[in-house]
Length: 353
View 1 (spheres, rainbow, N blue to C red):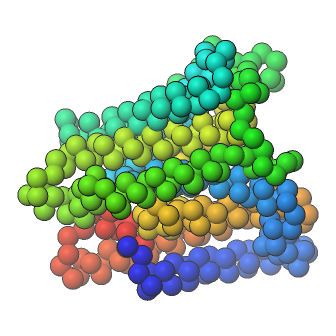
View 2 (view 1 turned 90 degrees about the horizontal axis):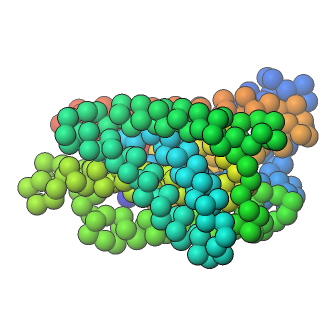
């Protein structure tokens, strides 16, 4: 639960990071006035820029929600990138194979299969933890890299579009693309899907027995075991849900913007989703404003590159500053907890951010 004190602390951290970004712009830009206006005000200056801001937030909402689930269960899913990638590739492949069917029949089937396959990929780490006591953080990261390399190899060989001029598959049928909401911006109907999934996750985490067991396992696995909770199964299932949400993020981006699978298209969705979850303090509904904030930084840089002399590296510097300040806050919270004699778990650190 986010207390007023934690909320103000997060606001202070984000404000400090933005202040640092302001200093970066002042030092690096030849026309700092124009650059500051373009970066901070530009994303809201017209419908095109604002639509792109919202579109950029869609995958971050879903990957942030994915990270929230695993963090709440006291496991760190660092394989979100690979799970996004696998979900995207499987979704494109299934859409090709089912191209003769109407979209209303294809969407439920594709989303279900993508969720399950990406979830199973993440659940492998939970299984290895149960069977061989393999660290989830390491195994999820390694499995993610393997998945990305395998999918890239398939895109560059078996499924490559020879007319594309880059490593990409052929386009899916236009009838499966999501409706654009603010053309010519990239904003699409997947925004409503992301919001619906986030609300659904909130209901699971806060209003169901499963959510209670996940939270209890994350806060005190020993007590959860005494209470009759199968801790190992909860850890594995939380990884499954986390991976499923990551896969949905990938195929939603394909249906909404790209229309085909491109090598490296996800551009850090998984890692940024982890940062979003940290800012949101593992609260599903708080993922939405946190994702919008990260998207605002990204699009501020894009607008600044068009209207001023801001580079993408400036935005990445600000994002990195936010990430490090938020995690540093978690480290200090960890030190305070240990001094107070409290046991530490990954979820206690994440929830104290």
